[in-house]
Length: 418
Image 1 (cartoon, rainbow, N blue to C red):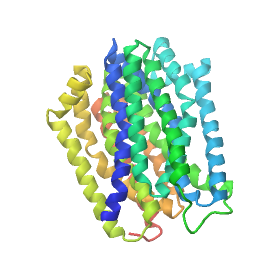
Image 2 (image 1 turned 120 degrees about the vertical axis):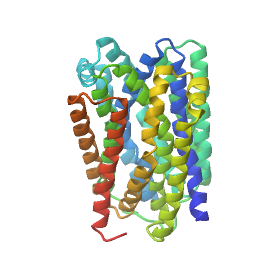
Image 3 (image 1 turned 60 degrees about the vertical axis):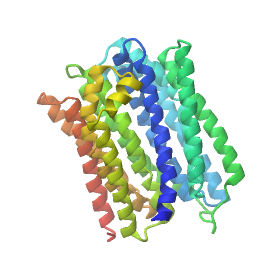
Image 4 (image 1 turned 90 degrees about the vertical axis):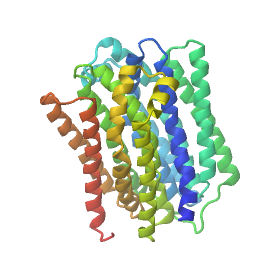
């Protein structure tokens, strides 16, 4: 248990540092005129970009698993660089073409002015895919070498850089798109540079060396299913937003969901670190691993519940972040629903971690696809019945993860593990 905790807590802090930047982005937007509209625009833009970013979200797991020899490391790096460029190009087309604008307008049911604001964000967010992928790749190597303390330090520096960029940009009176994307791009560049330095100074290939004859086909067979899983996760928000945006007070609802979902991401990121947990420690001692995960789950859920039912949420969202009152009120209700998330995500990631160790990632893709299908169908039924709102949409999101969890449970059980 002590070994598990020493490995896990730096990664949990890493997830905290990464998603705290979202809270500061929301706080910056809340200080602009028409704050609710600004929050909703960035929610739609970032959710659209996340659809493409998410395909590279498992890069760290890929490098952790396969970059275990000199040749394997080189092939793995070339693979992720090529893939990230292929992912970036479609997003650039959406941002710079009339056809892309039309797709966004029809998808979200928004007017030309809002669409133009969203495409402006996407034009600047697209190149960040390359930087983000490089960061994930290097992080996977540091985790592989159990240098998780350095991962935490580097992500804290990233958070500090984002905050400084937001403060400077807002103080200079720059447009929201320049403030938000500029601060993120600068912070990410600094982090990648420092991560390269740590890698060169402290990283050593594992012993014994593995994957000396690694093929691109082998990389693709592992990565495509997990990439699909990431994409399906990123589709969850846009699918819900596409329906919610068409409801009365849809802009306010989307802004509230953005604030609540971003706060919940702190705990979701902490839960997602268990994918590294199984890749690093293997599939032995599963009973002790389950006990450790249940302990973490109880802690995460308790913190979320404490935030929702005490004045803490008002202090953070009202006094510190200055979120508009109509958005804050709805966000607190959404957080109460999202308190179910840690238990569902940890249950799912228990099987995700095992499927990655067993190189059976196709089951993860199937679960992700069925989750999005389930979310779409439930949202469609509620929308048609006039019952879809910020609260029922959040419940649908949780139920989608329940569907995915049951699928990966079934896939994992086919090999006979318990």
